[in-house]
Length: 306
Length: 306
Image 1 (cartoon, each protein chain N blue to C red):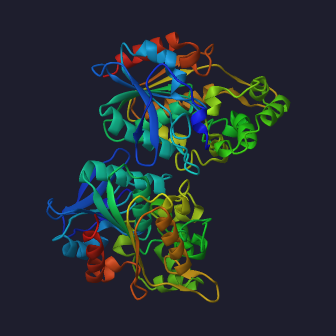
Image 2: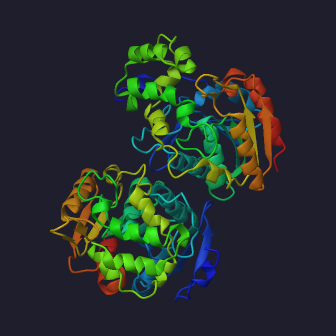
Image 3: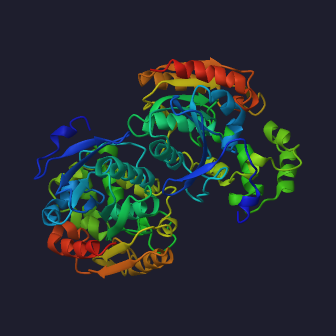
């Protein structure tokens, strides 16, 4: 942690930090302020620049704000304080203090869960609509109302990172991590074991995030069924590659079809329009792997919002 | 819950609600807006009007804002979402949207813990100083860094209320509560067993609050030692009646002398002025039982703030 400044690399857009009280939130602003405001929220282990190519495509249509969440990228580390409620309130403050007008939100993975959090719990009038890009509703909870839990989905990935890298990289045993991944039962861990060096985004990530999901503190006081029942804006959900492993029964992917059907039920029952885009051929981070497709889906939906 | 409107009674000042997004916060505003702003935060089981007599004394010097926290008084009930981080962010939003200028904060009991939360975690420049009136730092945690835990202090009171009254008064067995209190080992429960009818403030209180303290969800992701180490304003602490029961070892009162010494250490180490006023003869809610003394202590300290 002491030499985190050595970790970062330059990017195509100017980064800046805003003091939100507890944290300084690193972010970029790209595009003309006459355009509609769009907030992009990265997923776990991702920094704002995971959206770098998408931003280039989105900037002609939107004023794009892309952030590093607390504990990721250049934003503040907050040991013991990673939760949807603290992260969500960071974003509510960011909208109030940095954006200053109603915004469309698009978040990937955990960032998509936070997009729903903003729809349910942000300050009045802050959010126009939320795009949840392959967001792990229920599947990132320790004790979900519906379907697979974190232990039955991405938990094994975070467990090994937490054990071998440690909170705030306090262990940092990359070789030990890769050896453990190579022997692990979870296919994603075996696939991840091939990297010789830590990826740039991982170097910028506080593994306490993953531990907080595993142990349930990330979702404490924020049950997903309750949150989705309080959504107050339209929601677009894009559902990407997923499968159920026939041997372990585990969910390989972010969220199951059953769980998406429950998201749809809850948001619809809350009186909000829900649009589901099926993209079973898309990677989890479509915004990074296929930014053209991501931009087309998001722009079409966002431009039809009231 | 359905007939909660029948519960409320009129008060000396006009109540109003503000929409903060997730909750509507009931509050009163008393005093001229040329005066310094003062935010009063009630303790657990208390509504804003516990400060009614104090407000009369404070209003010539301050513009007083007194609130009902979520789950108390006329503010919104939020099952599953009672925590220092959600309650604290309600207050940060309230300061931003209703007060709109830097404020002095005085909170009693749990409200005093929230005053410290605001000092540590509110938006930049919102808080000038915080008065923690007999606040249970550490002693309201399930696993505190220092000294007595909730189970060794007020926990037995909340346990019986939760069991016999239930979340959102879903059980409501007052006679059963009083019978259980009369037989309980905790002296406060025996003392409380004398009331024939529920007090007005208790009727306005959601007992899920107490359960959240007992089970640790109220303080999840908000360790008190960490919070106090991040305080960013001066703090006044008034320490009221307390004793250690020689038989059970339990803390009778809000916070022990040892724990207050640790509050002082942490706030001082954070570089902030800390003033301790010893009031071992005062009741826990000095603002209600002796509003003149409360007003004198608070006003002298607040008027010396930069």
